[in-house]
Length: 541
Image (tube, rainbow, N blue to C red; front, side, top):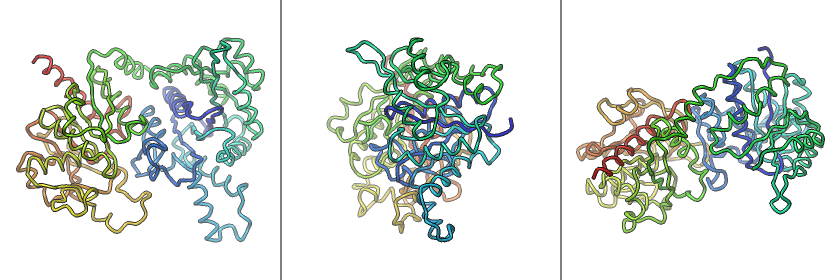
């Protein structure tokens, strides 16, 4: 195809318009035409990575195979494109400044005054182009976080302006995403916020090539004309993006609006072939025409913010569609449930998932949920801290180790069934120092895990400091909780399950980080299947 094509996606009027979903949808359509595409996210905040951010601030922290703690949009990129991302796909202002300051300290700038232009902008551009240098991609889509007009975004927009000059118009494209609000009282759609946003972008030296307009209502032709005239774009480059029923509808909506065709024609590429999106349509067919419905409780402490468990929620969409089943997820705060009231929250549920997290807040509620699932034979799935809770609950209530705990919660416990990993004991810096990224796991034949994965060797992504304490393994296995998955290099327990339970599985890793539309994660598919079975049997009774 020749030179790599760079597409920059900026946003105006308000944040959270869905730049990540628009970027992923465009990438999907280009991929469906046979191009190789990747997406990167540039975040204007000064944290070096999202690893130390509270989920309430920024939603979940997504972890890549190479162990980078990144923005949750990278999850969308992977779920849509079915290709892994890496450290290079997410860059923050913090990292940019950090790199420049380190260079300055080493004397790389030979005593020159270090400034935003050219030093910071050069570092940003170096990161813009980095993925393109590998020769693996035809298209690099770069999403610029935040909003035009934010002080933090200015160096990024300046770098985009410079990139346009360096790359030339046939290898550069700017898509600007804005909002067209509908004023109820006046009964009309308003283009002024978009005009202002484009004006601001122009002040930064960037003329958008394509406008994508989020709106609750269809954009009539006269509104499109007005936008084209005032914003200096061709009328067929004004694309409407209506609120969709599901994020997985957006690629098809963008196809209908011909977003991919506009992009290709602007970059002087052929538009004759049609994208092959049959598999995607099949997935949507299963998603929208379920033959079953199950109710699954997700017990966690960040439930007020749905984005805190983004990947888990999406994995249920994939695992549900695979089973032709609608999964109704009920987020229940682990701080409001206890052994006394747990029944009223969970008795209607067909499955119980105890979510990952850190710290002791809400831990008793999680333990109560595990016990309820274990005693009532309800399908149970514990992820990371959820798996550790399953281990603690079993130690206390089945093996009889009174006061057993994780040393994260009780450093002085007599029975530290979950303990800090050896190499974590002397660490002082909290950022980027956990056991992060993909590690191998060997699954024992004849176990639930093996029957779910249908293979013995897997690789899964991690983000934790504490782990199962092998000193207690024999006791657990004697009592019916077995380690069905082990990390071969360090003998760490990766998966536990109960022998005499229809489906009770805990994983130390995060399976939700590898589930995609075209490859739903086996553990979520298996868990949903178990919930369907449980519901059937319950209805028989």
